[in-house]
Image 1 (tube, rainbow, N blue to C red):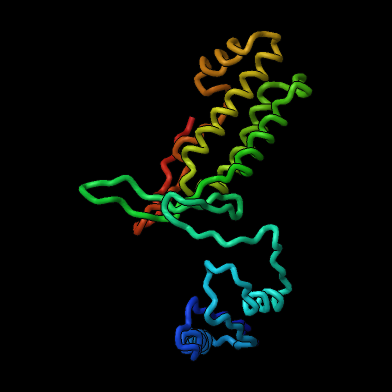
Image 2 (image 1 turned 30 degrees about the vertical axis):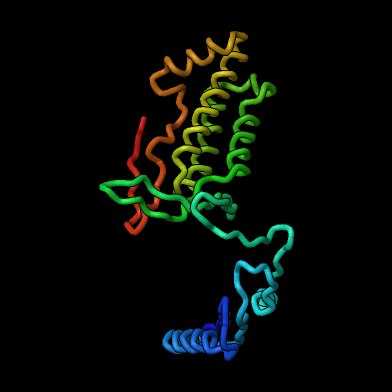
Length: 231
């Protein structure tokens, strides 16, 4: 049985009203499907509908309906990405158009960067705070550190593919602070004593380092391989 596919075509502006643009798109899609041996089961079109106009897209909605999906108005909006303008959150990342630092007389490149959204970062802080809460003071410090490390490995493993170094540094410092406060409370000492125990430890009491874990995309170049830092 051949794989089935649906075609969606759209042109922002059709000055002639003849629909030639969407017809060319459909022809290209059909040619691709034929080469791949796919069966076209539906074609949906939104002709002369700009992405910035905010107008409804009946063809797009029909495509989603065929897939059994329905966009939620409260979570759906159109964002015009411009350098220095607003961004948008998607799949835990915040996406924004930024410019690289000028180098060798160039003005820098504009590209779409992404890093953990505020909601994702707050979730990380909430989880770390829960793992190091006062109600768990009876648990050994080693157990607390292991559980914090387990969460950080999973969280970082997802968000490492992006421009996340700055957010990782914030979360790493927050984890150190929470572990230091946990140690201080457990020994009924002041917070400065707790921080001293973490910083004087050769491995920060076993807390993993997030340095070098980011795999940052680079404009027009392959993704940079991460440099591992082990303790």
